Length: 69
Image (cartoon, rainbow, N blue to C red; front, side, top):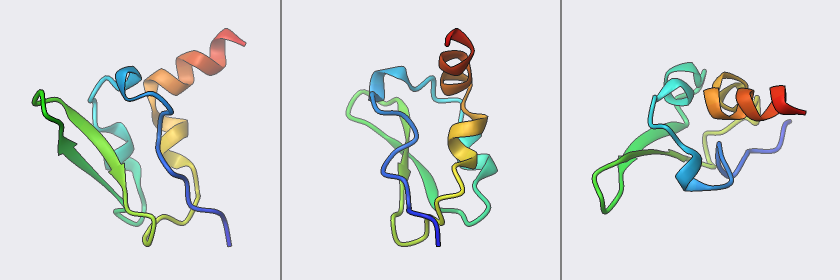
C-alpha cells in the first residue's frame, strides 16, 4: 500500500486554486475548502488517500517546478 500524502503543495501560497487535484483524485480524497480570505485550497482526507500522487502530477504549479529542474 502506498503512503498517503499530506498535501498537494508544501506552501499554501503556491496553490492557484484550479481544482485540478480535486478533479483527478480517483478516490475523492481531496476537497476544496475556502480559507479565511475566500480562496479555495485543497485539503486531503488522509483516511481516503491511497498515495497515488495523481494530484501532484496534474498540478500546474508542481509541473512547472519539475520543468525548471
